[in-house]
Image (cartoon, rainbow, N blue to C red):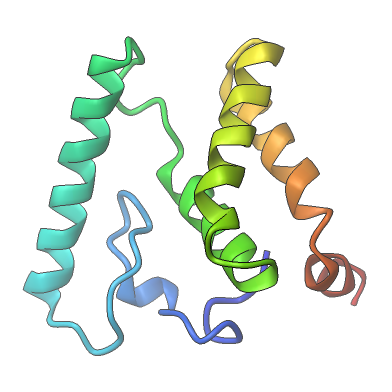
Length: 119
């Protein structure tokens, strides 16, 4: 995956640890925590409503995937790719490893991802 700073995004220190949610550079710690809390709450509620175990979603993986696709392809491709990865992972069994494998398959399609992995 691309480095956040190379893509113009926030560094890992600027994201809440629990979700990896992107936070505006220079955002106050309280603001970053509120964003993380809101995102954690939403993911938990949506997971429960969809019959998934809360906490079973690797939000950082999905957010990083969306960022890389948005920057490497086009912004509208990000949510569609997230859906495709989830669908593929579900068809493979739906485990965390299935999600990771589907995400890695898509990330390998990004030209900048291949070049960064090689060097």
